[in-house]
Length: 328
Image (tube, rainbow, N blue to C red; front, top):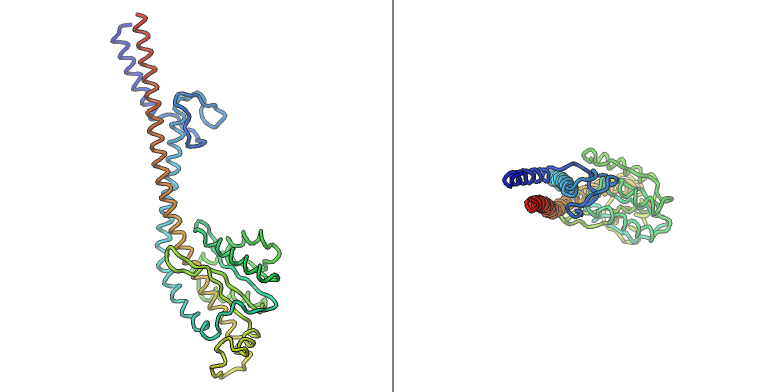
């Protein structure tokens, strides 16, 4: 074979090697750490055997996977951002329903009673930062302060965590409250179930919305009519400073207690839902940034691995051609 023919064959082999390095064989990657170019990989690891560019294809598949995850996180951030404004407006309007009760009956979490009912309010979905963990932590503290406390859970995420800590204290669980827009009627129906347990003191644990990147774990206390009467006699609230007309005092206090429960629960669920959207938007933004950083690292690894494979093929081809020339 002439020297020119060998050079043409070597050039053709180089082009074929470069095309194979860019194309390669599809497989399932185990990790982003690429083996040394030119090594053989065992077929039992989920990749083709005797394939020289297998590490290159593993990185390519991982890049596509990270890119798809980045698209999902960006879409979730946009959905949360689009819903946040409406939820925030509804939440701020509901605060006007709660403030008169706080001024009239006060908020007395330190009131000592025979038993306590703790109502943690959490989300039904995850991927929203640490809002559910904060609710569970506050609920755990309240249970430690009241050894005989019972628990009514609103939201699936708090149920999963509290059920491991207090499996015998959970009375009721309410889930899927955010599948439809929350109304005062829905909150009142849940409040009726809570009031039916006749707890002297009920404490609602939720996240109060502050901004799109900030929320504050909050505990709101609702006393029964008997406890409200005791607080009025002790001068804890401002109830006796008003003249009462209509039904008798005990019936009026019962109505106030029930309506305060409905109003506070409605506001707490709206506050927590708004905090969930803000926290999810922030979490998805951070996830998108992390995916972008990982994609850059994988791209650099892909380019280095591809260049190493091509360089190895070139060295082998040139070495073979040189050995043939030396033999001639």
